[in-house]
Length: 71
Image 1 (cartoon, rainbow, N blue to C red):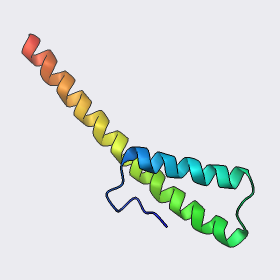
Image 2 (image 1 turned 60 degrees about the horizontal axis):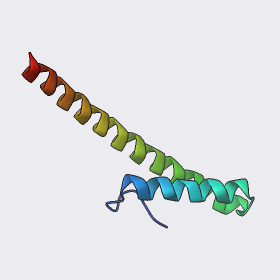
Image 3 (image 1 turned 180 degrees about the horizontal axis):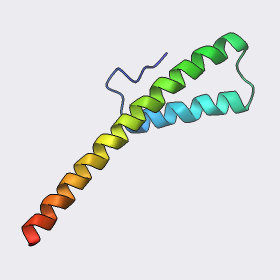
C-alpha cells in the first residue's frame, strides 16, 4: 500500500486519492478494505494540505520580497 511518507510527490498523492475515491464511488471495496482506504486517504489529504501550505508560504515570501525590491 503506497504511503505519503515515501518521498511521494503532490501529483502522486492526488492521483492515489483519485483512485481511492473512484474505488469507493464504484463500490469496489468491502468493509475491511474501506476502513484501510479511508485511513490511507486521510494521510494523503494531510500530506497534500501540508504541501499546499508550504507552497503558499513560499509564494507569499517571494511576492513580499519582490514588493520590497520595487519600493
